[in-house]
Image 1 (cartoon, rainbow, N blue to C red):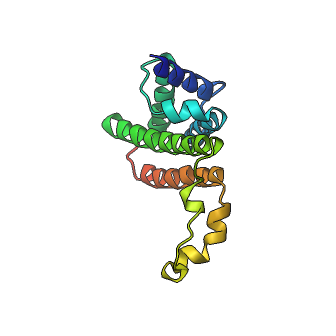
Image 2 (image 1 turned 60 degrees about the horizontal axis):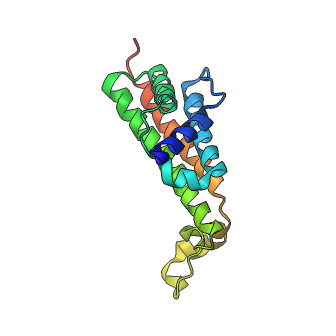
Length: 165
């Protein structure tokens, strides 16, 4: 019950002050960034609770906001629900994964695996070797912001082909 209450509070924090944008894609981007920022601000709670179903009012507000954006994008019924679930799973997984990484770093654990490859035979991995400095210096928030952009570009292309009511 405590974990569900914490998850519901994370939803409340994420939605604080949220208003839908004129653009459905900007609404989705805003909701994604809000979830990411909440996980950054509360990494231990997000790592443990961000993917939990609460059935609470704030979770329902989040579900409704995402479904509204997909509705405005042109999806209806089952298609809207599939897109909602895929989008939400993707964003929450990224945010909670990063929260785990932050908690792990805070308590002296290993750093992000992508940033620390040091193979015994670098020649066997030419692309990783060529990119190693970039891999070591990558900012996970930059990575996160790129991921919704990729997803939203694909969704915009799909939405353009949907029949309009």
